[in-house]
Amino acid sequence: MGWVNLGQAAHVVESAVDRRLESAVGVSGAEFELLMRLSSRSEQGLQMNEIANQLLSSRGGATRVVDRLAEAGLVTRETPAENRRAVYVRLTAKGRSILTRARPIFEQSVEEAFSHHLSDAEVSALRKILRRLLEGNGAWAVERCEPHLQASPAGAKQR
Amino acid sequence: MGWVNLGQAAHVVESAVDRRLESAVGVSGAEFELLMRLSSRSEQGLQMNEIANQLLSSRGGATRVVDRLAEAGLVTRETPAENRRAVYVRLTAKGRSILTRARPIFEQSVEEAFSHHLSDAEVSALRKILRRLLEGNGAWAVERCEPHLQASPAGAKQR
DNA sequence: CAAGATTGACTGATCAATCTTA
DNA sequence: TAAGATTGATCAGTCAATCTTG
Image (tube, rainbow over all chains, first blue to last red; front, side, top):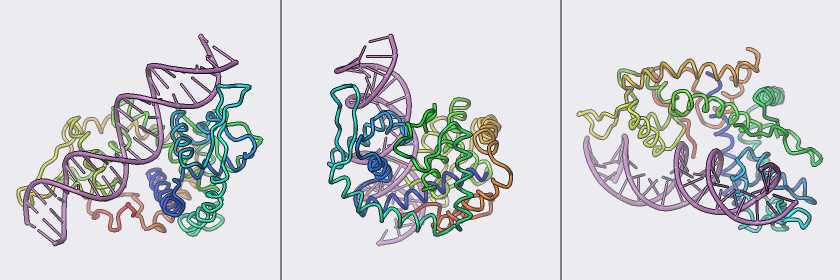
């Protein structure tokens, strides 16, 4: 029955971090995550497709998140002349500055809600276990998502 | 950055179980969980308040879940003469029978999406870690929710 | 007024359908 | 026709406001 706590624990930790981000810089956890991913690809930006895969939401969901961030002026949408179907999303200067403010808040609240309660050994044990779970279910762990990596092959999505 | 996977892993496992339950017996994961909790309190039933606390959703959320289950004829609402503010929710015969069908499906899909990928040691390590996280954040782990236990004191809720 | 629950408005996510470009 | 993205409908969850009973 331990698996039930997985969802509960994730919810408790995430909503704690969410509230802090929201009240401090006005972005949700999902929005912050996208800003982070964009910042490690500042040159090319990310395509909607990649965002959809990485964000674990549906294709339509990606559109909404980007809608909100674009509305707030934190990102831009650009469609290249070479392939006018694609849409590349990039951070704006404002987005970068918000991100700079958000990052320490994020780190601090993760520390408070997560790391603070666990030993280093437990954190790494947890990481290993979660990776197993993800891979066993056909999803790919995020870990360090380097710029040169492709968007997740089977994707972090299901169905 | 390992904490991100916590949400991802929970989502992957839960949605796998959800889909199986939904397609096999037409109840969502949250609904199944409520049915389970009700079945261990078949005599008294559960009060809306307790449901709200246990289900990690808001007070309003409990009303909606019960709405759906009552609509489907799986539970009844009864308000006792002694205290006409209270509403007690109980399983119907149909609810019990659905639960009987759902339980093996639930167990099998948890096995497939969760236990199957981990050793016994990992499962118990995970359980311990998650309990720490929950308690550290002021929530209470579910584990075995015995009939005689009160509704969670600080509750599984935050804010 | 306080406790218990419901309701309505809103937010976020998802799916299918659609629109546009290759 | 297929790839890439957006839109609309819908659904579950949350909060504040409300209604009812004590």
